Image 1: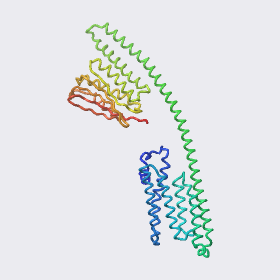
Image 2: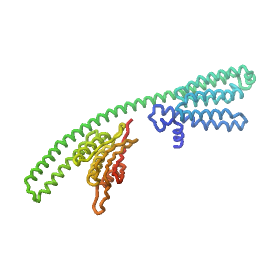
Image 3: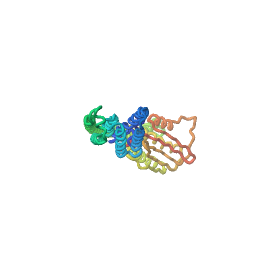
Image 4: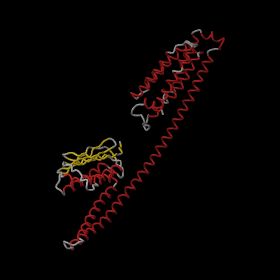
Length: 415
């Protein structure tokens, strides 16, 4: 966990925690290799200091690796500082080698370590270190022959050709093996990605087809429900009105008939909300705002009250499937409360968009009427309960110049 935090710290900001980024794994490999490499490079000075040798090169190499990490973090680039680090490393290593026996030097092993790090850290160009190592071995062999060191060492260690040949073969074997492994792993990853893309495409097509089927089912259900239920409610209302016309003014059954008519109309209005929610556009915040606006215009026209709506532009956002119906019920209750309690002349419906959330608000210019504690009041309680149940944020602003009810709803945002 701590290692992952360090890796993420040095990754570019736009790649951090974004594994879907096409270059995420490339940068993660580079950063992780250098994060591990810096402390390992700093292990060498302990032995070198004990033997009273120069350690400046090791510190310089570690510093260059840290500069490369900072370049990745702040600029999102590593190729140039990594190339500079590679060139400087060759100069540093050659300086160690020339002072400790050239082709016979134990410091040549550092070149093999460098080869391992280059191929591991840079999968695309690291294998070029095989050729650069071979060129450096050739130069070191040439220097060994022309500095008079070869005859002095030959009696004890043999000729310089043998260590030169062995180092070249080790580089070819070691580098070729690692490069092939990296290439083979990259091919396997490419096959896995291709298979994943194919599976995702198949799933996308299946989801798309299923969504179309569900939308068709919802529309059919809405149509059938509207036709059947609407006709039945209309028949009940007509029959109740006819019955009412035949009753006398003071007939005891008249209030019952009035209640039947009222309940029938209320049920029809409620069914319209339910049917609209079945439509697949009901999860669109903009569509929901238009629906509330249309309802508000029709509702407040009955009372000769000015009604207006205001919304800012939102991106592609989607509500939770059950959110729209609950918001409709909340704001219908709020609109009714304005008529019952506010004594307002103007009402404003607003919609404002924020990252991952949308706020719907109803503002009036009336006067807040304190609730009568002796009477039960369910309007605000129901609003708050619906908001709590659906994880909405409910707010009520009571002022002398008006009341504002706002509901903030979480949404899914699509780029």
